[in-house]
Length: 103
Ligand SMILES: [Cu+2]
Image 1 (spheres, protein in one colour):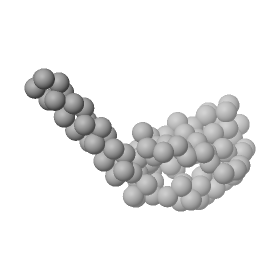
Image 2: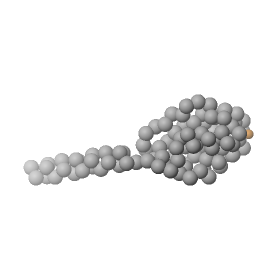
Image 3: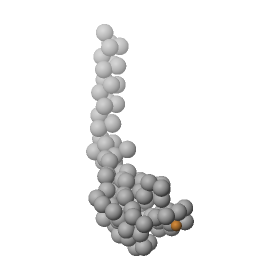
Image 4: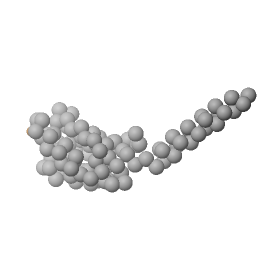
């Protein structure tokens, strides 16, 4: 009986910890569609500009797919800012991004 209560308490603590982590987490992953990228050099220049942006943690740019998958800290940088950075490279953001919640 005691063991069962203990494991229940542990399970509750884990659920609570995960819930808190989700509530406060600021790391998001967004996919932004980009027009005009033709080759690896295009995607490289977009990736370089994004990586130089404060708050950006990881960037995967594909010219074949015409998209950038960006992992960023939403306390440091906004998605609107990421779109500005991409537009600043000379390539154009195609549409609204699909932001997934926290990782
Ligand atoms: Cu190119």
